[in-house]
Image (tube, rainbow, N blue to C red; front, top):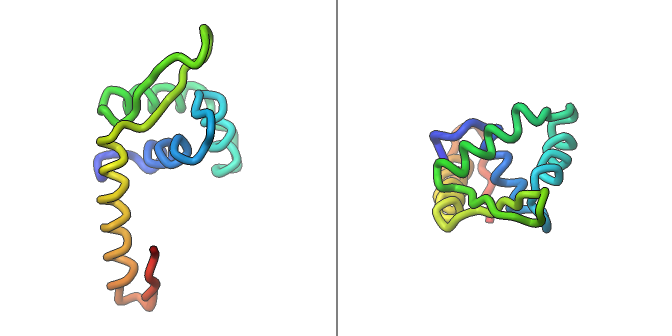
Length: 101
């Protein structure tokens, strides 16, 4: 995950958190998080990059709509990222000694 942009990581989080992960649903979730509209010229090239990196599979929901799902590689990287985050937070010296489960 360390080679991804923050926006690409956010896309992966959104894909895992919505029931129907298709382009416009992903866009809507990101629009709400960023509080600004995410344009298609930003979203779809990043989705394609995640597909090329083997982190997202792109399939057909219907004739006009693509569905995006995480690969097992992406799920493994999520676990590694979570472990790394937990180590930083629980062992930090900045007064942030919080254990995340």
